[in-house]
Length: 170
Image (tube, rainbow, N blue to C red; front, side):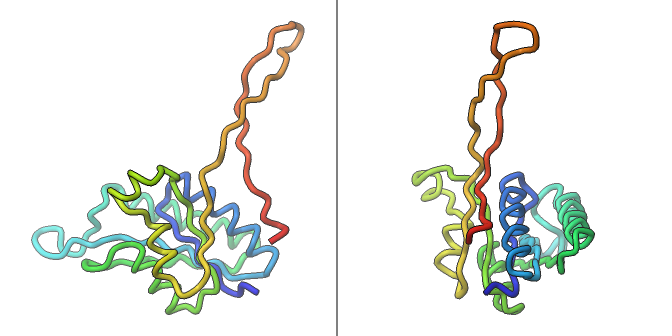
């Protein structure tokens, strides 16, 4: 069903949550994973062709490492750097997906709510409007408090466990 899946990533923890879902889907459908990182380039002056995002070189190195990790696990995976001095990340991601014949885009969302999204936009929301293929939006992990007894005492300590969705039934 999904031969090629785009994992849209900015190197954040939110994007890493979306990677876990992407892996589950790619494993289930034997899909190729395209790790698409979109960056806006500054044109002109001494920064000609450089990214406007501080630390973007480190982000790209992290994503390349994640792609190598996917390959080591047996996935067909590729890093795609989508950059432009004119287009914003949602348009760059959409274009990369279309050029490579992607069947699905998986993207994380910060889940900030309506007002911040209205003010700042949202890559996931824009992809939903722009993309010709389905877009799976992965919400941030939810933290759940679990009380566990401490060893040898009646007291309880608080532990945080992250939960994630099981997409194996998709």
